[in-house]
Image 1 (cartoon, helix red, strand yellow):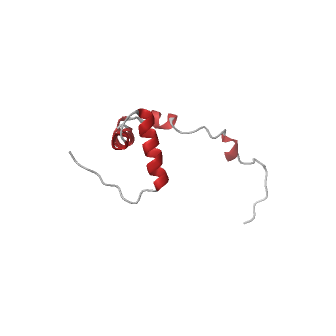
Image 2 (cartoon, rainbow, N blue to C red):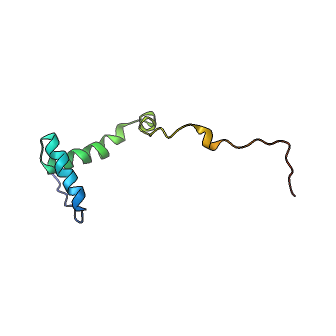
Image 3 (tube, rainbow, N blue to C red):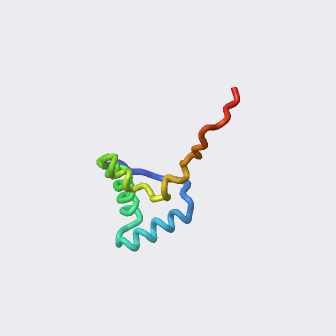
Length: 76
């Protein structure tokens, strides 16, 4: 089995990993494996509809509405 060494991690990130591992009752190494597995392996099996469902709701489409002022003057 392969090993992975990650250098240069922010200490706050390491604390978060250790905290999450403790909450799940596993070692930081096991939690790291689980996170990598979840993000990298399971993503491949999701279809496009699943990806769309994970997108946050940011409001309606009114931000993209364009004013419709007809007729309008056009400079050539």
